[in-house]
Length: 131
Image (cartoon, rainbow, N blue to C red):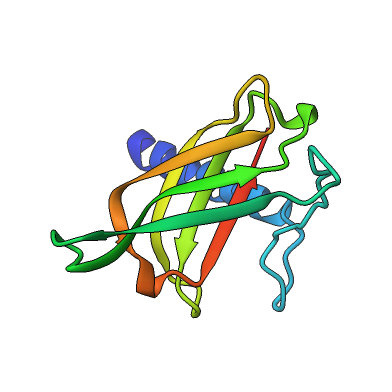
């Protein structure tokens, strides 16, 4: 009998703990409990991203591919920060991503994509510098 009472008490305590944590989210039937926060950029000026295509007979060719993206205009306030560069289609589908750390000096980042991406599919370049 003591085991049954113990099991029931443990179940009630667990239920109460889970219910208490869920109640602290302040959820209603039309919310998800998420929040958006505006974050300051590491620089005010725009970055410029360009790529040069080169012909290859190998996959994903034969055709022109993108293997390198050059980003210019980096400010000192963005030095030594993690970045992610994404090549995408017009619909926003990712074709490839490259990550790294911005240099500790200079205004240019050279990003290498491996594997290379078919140039005919690339219509957007996204650059995110975080940290």
